[in-house]
Each structure stands twice: as C-alpha cells, then as structure tokens.
Image (cartoon, rainbow, N blue to C red; front, side):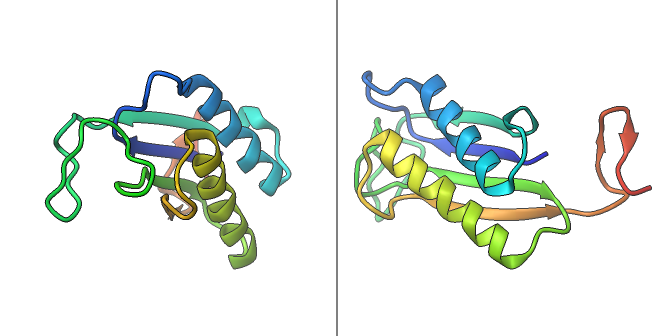
Length: 126
C-alpha cells in the first residue's frame, strides 16, 4: 500500500504524466514484489515560479535542477534494503521518464505505524 506523493514543476508538453505514473507504479510494485494495484501515485504540479533553488524559480521542469520531490508513504515493516531499493527505483524511473539529469530527483520514505492508518474499511494493526 505505498503512496507516492509527487510534487514537481509543470513538465514539458512531450511528457505524458499518465505514462510516468504507470512507470512509477510498476517500478515500486516490482521492488516490493506486490501487485501494482496496491501502489498509488498523487501528482501535484507546483505553481510556476513557486519552486526556487538558488534564487531561480522556473516555470517548467529543468533537466538538471529543481528535482521532483517525492514522498513514499508506506506501512511499517520493510527492511532497510527494500526501502533503499524502492527509493532508487523511484528516483531512476523519474529521471528516465522525465528526461532529467542523472540524480535529479529527491525521494524520501515516510513510514506509517500500526494503529495510525485507516484503509480498506479498517485501522491497520489495531
């Protein structure tokens, strides 16, 4: 049940966000050895000019700066090795699909704990 919460500048016209989201879902599901239907993506386009790096606030996604910001939000219990593999898979997928410079993605893992998540009609771990 991981959720990928992506915040990024608007993408150039040639980028199909549906294709990018599908690639992210497939990459995460593969690393977790889970069905893709259990991985969700929310894509938030940042308002042009509202994401600054070193005083530069572009209107569109540059290739080598202003990395997309991704929070992978997932239920507790995954090993550090699996977490690292998912982080790398998300970053590398974004770089490939968006045509970014190598390493131009920022991805973090937020772990959800038992008794603090409601999904599927119940509180998990309660």
